[in-house]
Image 1: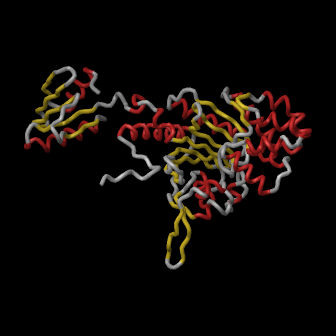
Image 2 (image 1 turned 45 degrees about the horizontal axis):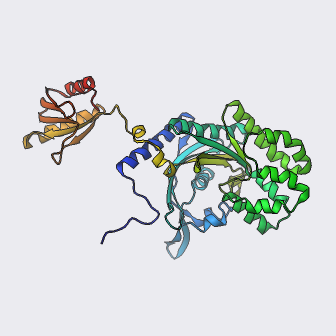
Image 3 (image 1 turned 180 degrees about the vertical axis):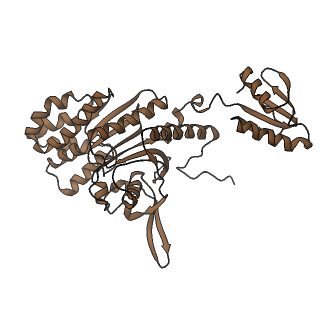
Length: 408
């Protein structure tokens, strides 16, 4: 019987792994250049890490993989991590303080029905200890730099604000349970409940509904309506001013963006700016501010924000020529007799030290470039493409021939 791959999981072929490593390497190099340092957290965390601070929505908590981890006679419920930010914040509260620029590459697990991915990979950063509009703008600029380095086209930066969403909900005269349910629906990308409730308040409808329908626009609408919004909803002043401050920095950086206030798809721990990266209808990344999370986890009143790039959703969008280094020379090293096997390994090692990809011949196959080794000083370089054979006496001579003939 043929054994099937576990539902919701994916294999990565050599081509897929090349794309994966290209993306991870690009993210890592860019993060390092921007001053971020790499961290890694465990795959398994205690369940209460994700419940005690109300850090995940009920809908997401219902999708985690959890089990009892028996330690002696008492067992703790643990989970395969469903999120990247919360474990990094735990690490920060355990052993760090002050300003910290941290980045990671992680796999996360959530149960998805049907054929949805249950294991997801992402590269992300957490900017902890900075609460300014400049810090928010840095993360958006950093995310767009990743987009540029990966040569992704047609990516849109979309903005929202958790503080604005919560103010809107507070004006709808909902019970606490209704307000939480509606906030969760907004975080899941569904705004129908919010729009329906807004229509029941004629005195606020003229203010709320235009905000709900604000999609694909610049900040001019908010700037022009600021005075009337603050008169009608005084509580909106602080989050609106925070939003506009960050937008002003984005304008200074000449970053293009669109605004969709009512679409804050993300996590319940967001408190301020939320941004999302879209390629068409596909969300490929995003992040936001979570100033209350560290305090809720016992780490003090520390502002923080983060971003994530969703590697799984980009796998098929990174072209093969983007992930194969054309300058790397690939050579098949073949011993001409059993007596030359030791020399073939030594020559292959010397080629690798020089930056080549050197494979020992195991099955007699052909390759674009083959080096037949009789001894370390008696070799023949064979070009399948050029149909040529050249005698060489050293690895340096091989490298010079490859360079001259454009070998790769």
